[in-house]
Image (tube, rainbow, N blue to C red; front, side):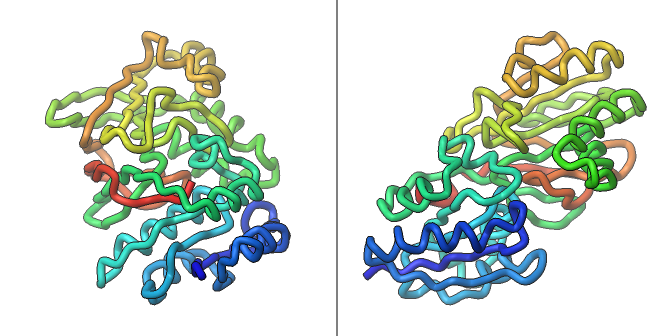
Length: 295
């Protein structure tokens, strides 16, 4: 009999975690898979589980949630003292589901069936050193307007999903300077940037197609660079981020690299996998096929 850990965030994804658990449990039971169910009680709890649970005798570590939950599980696993690893399975249940968009699996029942089938896929991971702290990212590493907009959106939670778009528009209007040195595979660029995003997935957030050429296992990070531009130009560019058409714009530079660093003139926040985590200076190195995911 196979055994899987299943971490459930009761508060995530509009508090649908327990409802999803009730629906998917029969799928695992019918496949003769034993689940050890673990409920999170606070932010960072999934990371603690992944870091401290005994892995011996288990065939996978799964979770119901979105990108934030996936980020916690990966970081907990890759920071273990014993270097133990398990395949990771995600059942769609968050508000941001970039990873599940990339593997075309937004139905939690379908994701449960895929986990039961047990097909493994290797996945690249970005090793991130942010102001001397170590993190791992599977989705995006963002700096500039994208991070400032995320920070502002947290103050506008009462607006619901619309807060992200509004926050981005407000940041475009504010039009602040963001002077930084950007190093791409050793090549240096000093510029006033609007934003820089390193991507391992095509999608970010709610289906924003930020890196349309990205692949989960190609050994490359897709870096989207937007230099200083007028407010009108940026507002026209913004809708194209949802379709991937932005990479055809003269405002956008699109690079595929193995490493990059962001060294701004002033210490500033960064976004990892959709969460405001860490500060510059930032150094990112891709680790090819670092984990296996159940897809």
